[in-house]
Image (cartoon, rainbow over all chains, first blue to last red; front, side, top):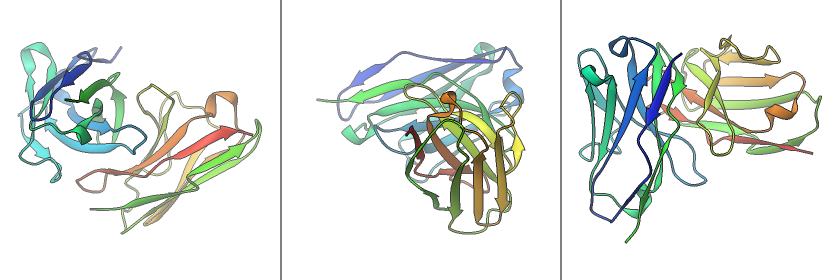
Length: 117
Length: 107
């Protein structure tokens, strides 16, 4: 069965970077795009960007351009999302999600990133 | 960016009630509209994609309709498992955007 398993919770200081991993299993990793979505406490879901797992092409939300980098390791069937220059407003749960054509059909369990001095 | 506005933001309903949630887009998005259900502490779950297509494994009491700018999610007979927050999401263009959510609570 399809599974997306994310890395564990992180606590970071303002100005630091965080890298979250998303390990896929149960399907051919390079056949689907992987998106990253975050949810701050009590807020709506917010799309950050996506990666074509086959060729590595990426597209990012303008809001995060310059601070976010999405990569993948096809040999490990794993996607990564790195967010730099962290601030308190980046405290959120970060999700990876496999997208099939138009919608996110499978989601990781989420990774809580807390930014606090 | 395409803005999605859901209404209501919250509602109270009883088991067996028919529930309707609407989502309005700031511009036409054809049928590129998805609906997700999210329970506390859990990742979102896809219910409806492309405005009206039921995702595999989702109960048939869920249905979606609409195109252009106005969309509806309907739960025909609310069940205890349906108390959750519902989000619409557009996949017409990037940045993908979500509605603010509709919390369905027990009356």
